[in-house]
Image 1 (spheres, helix red, strand yellow):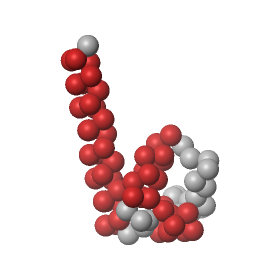
Image 2: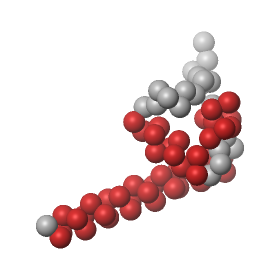
Image 3: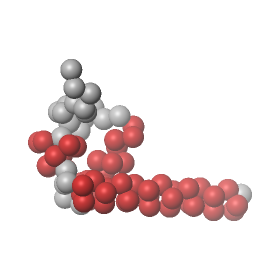
Amino acid sequence: MPKGKKNEPFDPHNMKPEDVLKFEIATELGLSDKVVKEGWRSLTAKESGRIGGLITKRKRELKQNDLQKQEEQ
């Protein structure tokens, strides 16, 4: 049996918590239809990298905002 990733269908109504942000960013980039129809594995390396970069950026911004709120209190 091969050990590769399964090509599981994507259900936008039943997402894991870590997939919520990823799907939001995919939607902003106009890739949500492709992900819903064909799954995450259908994305090119460039598209996946763009999503990953934006996830990192978004998490960094959220962390900065939390730190600023804590300093204000």
